[in-house]
Amino acid sequence: MDVDTGIDDSLALLYLLASPEADIIGIAATAGNVPASQVAANNLAWLDVCAAPDIEVALGAAEPLAIALRTTEDTHGPQGVGYAELPQSGRRVSGRSAAQMWVELVRERPGQVVGLCTGPLTNLALALRLEPELPRLLRRLVIMGGAFNHPGNTTPTNEWNVHVDPEAAKEVFDAFSAAPPDRRPIVCALDITETIEMYPEHLARLAERAGSLPVEIVSETDSVAARSAANNPIVRYLTDAVRFYFDFHRHYDQGYLAHMHDPFAAAVAIDPALARTRPATVDVELAGTMTRATTVADWAGMWGREPNADIVIGTDPAAFFEQMITRVGDYARAVYPPTTLEDA
Ligand code: RIB
Ligand code: CA
Image (cartoon, rainbow, N blue to C red; front, side, top):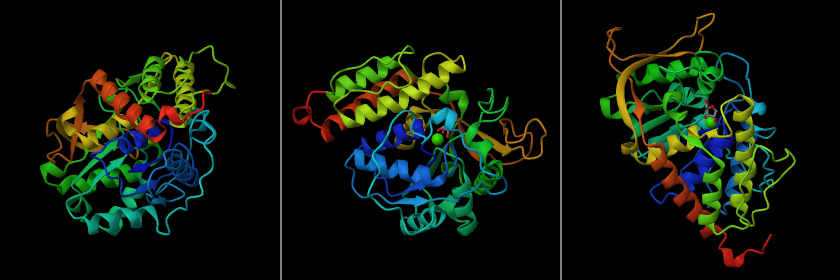
């Protein structure tokens, strides 16, 4: 996983921890929603909350490849996990950089590693500079990023992960231009991830599945100071995190909901059959005055270049939420069995 945790990155981590098919071999902390050091701290803290095994968390570059870092605490909260106040972890960050971890883990497991990027592509670009063979050494790459036939969420035409580091995004897509068809990155762009709409009812159903009490229905009338009283810590911190995202989406007139971009990409990384895709040649605008960091898809070969991406063009959001609630709810119950919890 290469993440900029992040509220939805947090749920992507929980989804993979909850999925028996997934063996997380490393987490790259990429600067984006919040600085890389905060991203690393958030992942170490979540691993503690989940009593997860030791999983390597490696610190990524402090800045994007060519421009100053822009973060977005207004979207993800002061620490990047919404209203959640995760206990600081005693776990230590890796001694190697995120780029070194990418390269070394994949070289050790040729053809076996699925890379999942849910943040800016800075560290994957740095890894590709170290190891240009990465597209062929990876089993597959899944990217949450970009917007194609769909408005941007950061400028009118660009999406946050690409906006933070457009040079990195271009280097990544260019590097996969020579990849064989079964190695093309699967790209989960806003076109599809903005159909993954999480509602308070989803959180309540997850709490029920986990056997957590009380089951809470968060609401737009809740005070910003409100904190979940759920007795299951995973449910409690997730509720506090996601409620901030609900407030953010409502503030921007999207409704009291949250677009769950990253856990959807995580689900696709485990089961690509969840997504219908279409090949295209993707490039990134770097020089546009109004369009910099816009991802452009050539669906029809107008540029005369081989496709370098399989863009997700369809999915079943309800099926995703059923699977996510079942998996994460059961996982939260397993980590904190109801019989062991004090009533709140
Ligand atoms: O544009 C949405 C993406 O940007 C998500 O990955 C979110 O976590 C932020 O990183
Ligand atoms: Ca993210």
